[in-house]
Image (cartoon, rainbow, N blue to C red; front, side, top):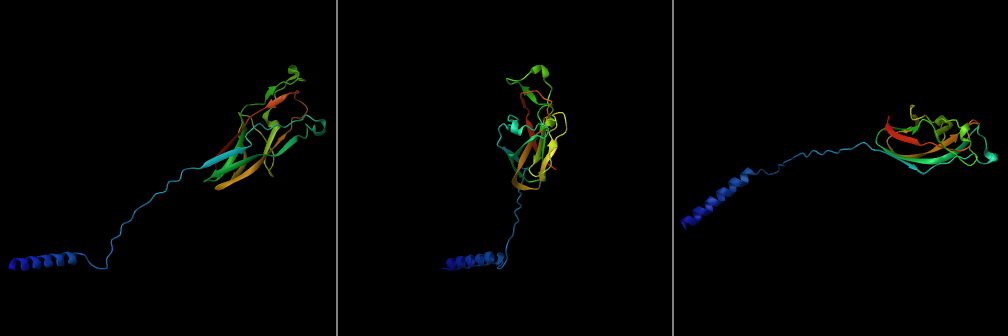
Length: 176
């Protein structure tokens, strides 16, 4: 019996010692640092992405000196987390020529890219620079998403041979 009482007394003393080590009303705190990594976002989409045609085929609209305009011909959709700008430049030093039934290749003069003018709708037209030149700024903006439209104007005058002239326009979005 003494052994049992001694064992119970020893057990109670141990229990009181354990309880004495845990203070009541205190808390333990730890901090977890979190990191969010945001990469650069520059996204540019052009619709429609197909060939745009400006045609001087009808006498009623044949104002080669004043030009023909394609208003809101493309929509540019963008996403950016920086201040941004969209620039344009031709993909060649001049238009590529393709003859048609009434063409006289002997009279062919190269058509410079500056015959094509571009602007953000509501802005001022700028001549398209050749691939060897400096790109023009078509639009600029702040962080976010949105869209704008582009107008084109062709002003070939009366100097160029009958035929089809084609050039690619390269649009690039960069931070300002």
